[in-house]
Length: 178
Image (cartoon, rainbow, N blue to C red):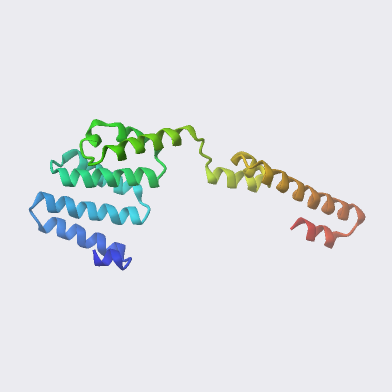
């Protein structure tokens, strides 16, 4: 755990793996697996952490381990914006059995319902659109004010560049183009 706290994640994973192999106690092995999953979560490797935790969730019988695993799975789904998985896992009977607080459960269901109504914008897609035509990414994101600003400013610079080219001021056109 101290390697994890020192941000030496490779060493932390190696030591958790070795410790897991050296112990014969199933609960301790699962705890080491959970610690490994936490390291993967810290590294934003949600898929690997999900795989480890889901294996534990399907094979473990200890209520404490299952409770901890289910909460970490919810964290992964939230941090990774995997709303459909979050919603289906939250509504599963398996998960409901490991909650202390039923109010927490109902508030999470409300959050899921609210988030599922929202339309999510892919930032990479918006970035690509803005590279093609400046302002198109803002339009895709629904930001009309900045779309108008980007189109207006870029239109002015294109006009100045074309006007400078037609007047034979090539250096000025080059400055307006960049």
